[in-house]
Image (cartoon, rainbow, N blue to C red; front, side, top):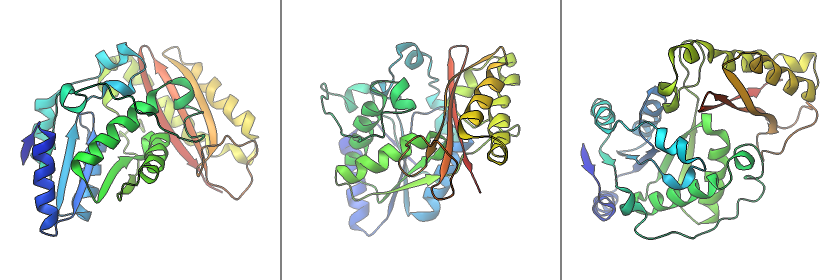
Length: 281
């Protein structure tokens, strides 16, 4: 496993391997790796000859500086985890490597950034697009792997990949959960003991919400989810939306045609957690 901080050297390595007919799988992360990240690496290693993992806490996607400052940075522990899996290159650049000068690019996300995360975190998806496009240009992978916990982000990345003309297959991989159902997240390690003991209510409520179409309208289901979680003193729901999985448009009735996804963001003290579930009929 090679650990690189230079974009130029990584690109040279990848171009050389591709010239030998090797397929490249890429897993971009912000570090603080957990089983969810490792599952992405596992998918990448099954599909590709070479696996590249990036670790970079990207400042441009944080609209809350406090959230950026709090984000866990444990590079040495991450490296130890990566040594135990199929990872050929770790790209861990400094900020001035990724942003040697201000990047003023703007992106057209259509309606994808007008709801949920886009509405509540202004500029977030522009920051995601900035860093992902930079990483794609450096790594030049055949396939890139993202977790479905960030459901809206995956939709945005698929959109900009097509828009910017990258010949890269975006592979979305299932949410990995703790034994009590909590979606794995790097932010989970920031939770206090008492917060951690309560946050499984998020997934428990979402799982129960799958049964609600039998007896509640969409609006009633949304109200029930928000009320149920907010009754816990440790948590405050920022949003819960039920959307069309193909375009993220909020739905008004259950219908039978489109895929429906319930997406949630919850504040637990100053920590923000997201999750989602699919409704099946």
